[in-house]
Image (cartoon, rainbow over all chains, first blue to last red; front, side):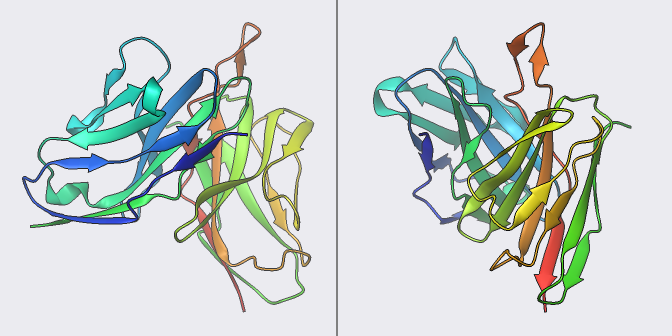
Length: 113
Length: 118
């Protein structure tokens, strides 16, 4: 069975600070990895995804994530956050022949102006 | 304008009543999903369907039922057997299979329905 852990439940940063949100998964085979974001009052939307190839993936709005297979991690980063990045962020994994995504518990990011 | 619609946005139910949440998509996607979102627990899969007239239980299917009579529609019924139904419910869809290969890993989400049991 696949599982996902997001250890940071609530992160508070000031504008222009750097961001790194942790995501670890448990699955021994090939995985597809995702970060989704849920802005206040909006749909859950895809930030970025990793299927194969370059382990450093760039997404929308200046976000990136690095897949480190040896650490079973897919951490989300942004060099300089903005107030508009305030949202809840979810990591998700799809492993092997699984036909569904498994989501982490989410990290609420609050950016102070 | 393609997308996923869910209705109603807010739903109130008395204990002991069944309620049905609507989910419609015009993305021509084969696969559809229902999730439940609770604070601090992320999204948990209730049911999913890879094709019309077929669906599978997810991790927390007890107390829920679904149907998939049309490609574009995947309604969820919350029955009186669901012990703690108050939650935010999200519907999603993905492409599913293309040329025999499963490509439905990326899911697109609707705006959600917030169900409150009184």
